[in-house]
Image (cartoon, rainbow, N blue to C red):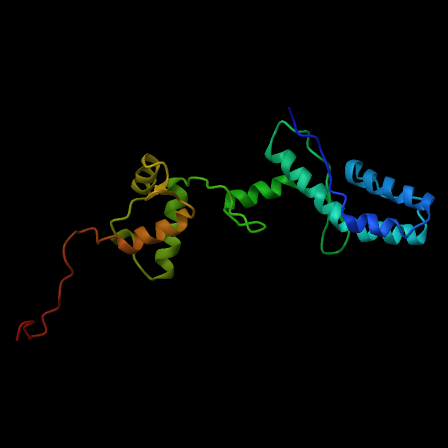
Length: 198
């Protein structure tokens, strides 16, 4: 059974509405509920009623966004038409596609780490190449194979020790750092005429 949509009615909402005459108080409370559940902007409120509504609107908008996130996270719930305020203050439709794109990129949002998604060998190769270029390394001269990397961690369930991998890009960088030269031999020391044991 899907969870029923609900909102928090904070004590500050109650305290603000008690400052209004009884008829206006009912209108503002109804406007708050209509705004949360249906996204209907208030009409017919007095100036003081509109000020009270605006004082509560930010928290209501946040509750609408949270409800939409829950609905999107648990697909059995009916999606909500949530509105949020952008930097200009204009209302915009909630965009779950944008959030999914951020999750794919592994971007942290609101202090929570995005869900881990295993990389493809092509993504691993791109990450390794970028790191090698930043360190002025020749990736082709190193014994680093993106397919071997993916296969190695896939067979381990993307675990690093006893913990689930959180950042595959960091692990790729460590693999590149610890990669040996392809020829497998030790680096040749130039003969400068001095013995290392003199």
